[in-house]
Structure formats: structure tokens, C-alpha cells
Length: 281
Image 1 (cartoon, rainbow, N blue to C red):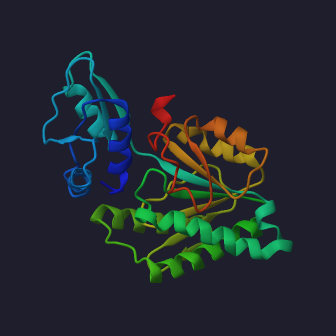
Image 2: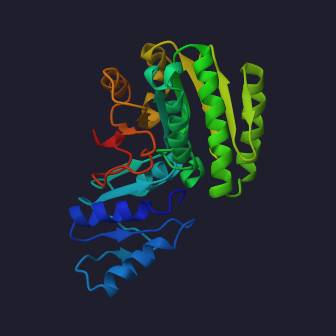
């Protein structure tokens, strides 16, 4: 429901794999699935799927659940033995900005990188599982500070073009807590609707809340990124990279199943399978 277009991918994969498909739309987003079905009917497509409020899978059936961990566990507990349940649960994306991308001799790249990251952040107000919430910047502390400042400026421009939606009470509390925490750690760019925190000497990774909040972490080399991400490896669904490099393979090995995509394309993965591929490997 956080990513209203996700039903298109989910239905497309289902009908490509099975002759009979039953879809139970999210109670928080029950609009797009009926519209998709109506469009297929009006176009005379042979592709069909059934909408239902109740699922009754039989042994041998496969159930794909897109939602919170609690939702996946509840549905799995209700299914009979012999039913295969594949859960596509919560996760988040991270960004890796190489030292070359922010070389002081090519300051024009700095703005370009920040612009691309900002578009990945504003999509779905960072509530999607591919949404980047942590940006690792390789290089000296000054590089991370320059990038964070440029990203904060880019997010201010995005707010004028794509205003952020309303936050829930929980999200507002988490925003306040994150802002207070990062102000005690280092620089903090508090925008109209965004917060960009900076950690120049990270000992552990702080995951900011959704709603256009980004934690910029300075690293000396990719090894630091590997160390900081290790406790969260099962939650990482996507890694955005500023440019292809030899270290991308080692970063990808840290989070099996995570997609490696160029910055600016983190929210537009190929239609080649579930967005969250962690449980498919």
C-alpha cells in the first residue's frame, strides 16, 4: 500500500507464472487493482485475475505476501500445510557515493549526484522498500559535508516540485527523535520537510525514519560500509551507486538479493521479478 503501483508488478508476475490468480488488495490501497482488472477487460485481454477479500489457498498453491513482517507471519500461520508462502517484507535502500564522484576537481558532479539521489528519495515519500535512507560517502569529512549540503538543497527544490505528503503521528515522532539524535552527532540540515543528518565518524549505523530523512555517513573506504551494514544485511533491498566500480561486487556480496542500480533509478527497477529478491535466492 505504500507503493500504490506495486500491484502492477505483483499481478504481472503472478499471471505469468500461474493459470489461476486471486488478488487480495491492501485495505489501505484498494483502488489500483480493480482499475487494472477493468483496463484488461476493456481491452479484451486474455489476462485475467480475480479480486477477493478472502484467500483460501489449498496445498500446492503459492501465496506471495507484500507487507509488514507481522502481516506475513499472520498469513503464513493461517495457511494449511502444503501451501508455499513467500513473504516480501520491509526493507530499505542505501546509496554508495565513490570518492571519484565527489572529487573537488569535478565539483559539477556533486550537484548531479545529489540531484539523482533526491529523486530516489522523494518517490513514495521514502516509504518503499527500495527507498534510500542512508548515503555512504567515500572520502574525507569535507566531502561528506559538501554532499550533505548539496543533497539538502536538492531536497528543498524537490519540495517545491513534489510536495511531501502528510506524515502519520508515529512518523512525526520518529522525525523529531531522529533530528535530536543527529544534532548530537554532527551537522544536521533541517529543511522544510526533509532532514539530512551527517555522521563523520560512524561507529554504528543509524537508520532514519521514512518521510524524506537521510543519514549521510562518511566512510574511508568500502570496507567501512561493509562493517556498518553487516547488522542490517537482511533488510537491504537496493544499493544505488554513483558509478560502476570494482568494489560494487564486494558490496553486492554483503546483501545477497539486493539490486544494484544507478543513482536516480533506484525506484525504477527492471520488471524482471519481485522488487524484493531477498527471499528468492
